[in-house]
Length: 85
Image (cartoon, rainbow, N blue to C red; front, side, top):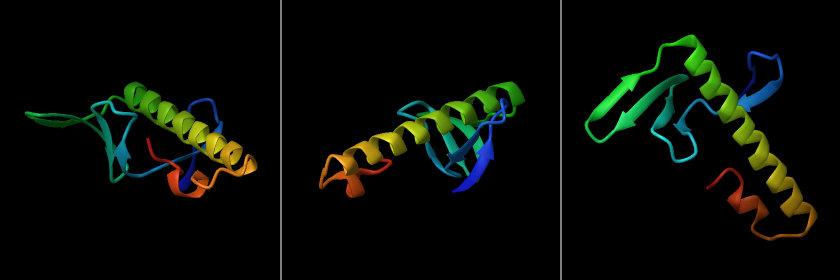
């Protein structure tokens, strides 16, 4: 994962691949795709993909915050569950 910035210049870490919070939006090799049972389409609208990047970054930051809290509380699952939903 590499540091990225969203449209408001707040640094985040966004994975290059993965499904976005159970949605049909999937990031593959740095590009957003919308995937359904009948196929997929690459998202190319900069405003839309920017919002997907922003949301993914916020989700990553939330996951990191939860992992930090669990570690601080001595939760033995904290290190194993990081980033999983």
